[in-house]
Length: 376
Image 1: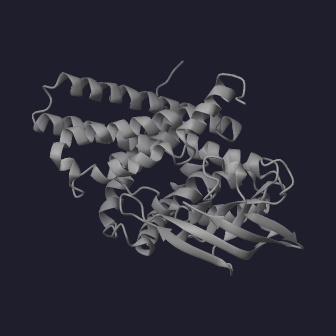
Image 2: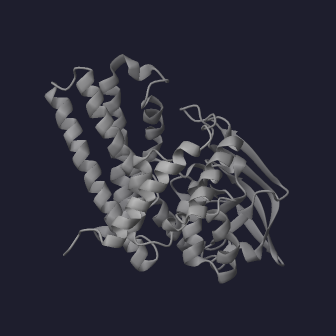
Image 3: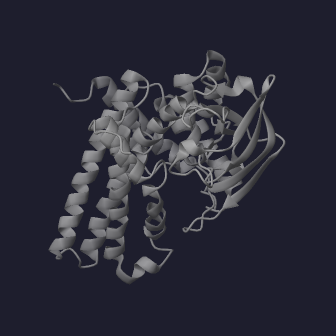
């Protein structure tokens, strides 16, 4: 098997690298992490530049190799990440592309790619986190609309979002996995209240969302009524299988920086630390190969498979260990929030919870990958 890049792929890398070299110095200064309206404008501005240059399509409409070359080169050049576009670009958009009608794809996909609209994720609820299917936000059909009442928590980017991928219960009498529907909620609809939540790292990219008899057009339903759990599995397969690809590249860069920091700080003579760094290097190399597999599977089948849970489980823990190692290298400076990697260490604590807890991922791997019987 020939694993070398084709001439066309090499040409894509060279062209992208040249464009990044010319474009990145033209970007405005990054806004304050606490100024979400400014961050939204900055992130959408970057997405629009990608769109105008012909690179926005790589998230959905490119070969696996081209997609991964794009991630490698943008991370190497320290280009902006998707930021506020995370939900729309990396799982709501791909879900609509896979499950939406022609009219829905026409309405929502291009605005996401052009950097015109931001999406948030309305899945988790105060009493339905890891057990997502036990959600209680209710949607009652009333002619051509659903009337939605309930609340969501940990809603990513809700305070600056135009749309929300929303899970609701449309049949309270059905078994809990069968009475759920996936809706696209316009965030400017009457009856919506958003309250930002501040994380341990001091940021506020999450929010509580309260819904009081909010009208959502039936035309905004993706998939059939009460078939939302299947559609949700499509969303989560993208979130777990391919959405973290850019972060793996970033972690490999951080690992190289850590090795240089350890050398400069006189810590390189510690054999235990060197072994730890070497093992992490092997971990992230293996995770990158798994990303390649998941992206290839998503291209071939439309969505990633259960390998996304394998990746999510291992990546969450590897990321935490990476930043624990950074704290070890920094020593007392690991308590200084202005030092590199310190805030990243705090945010890494959430990764074994976000996008499905590690406990949930182990269950999925056991049942769907290893074929073990379901627990009782």
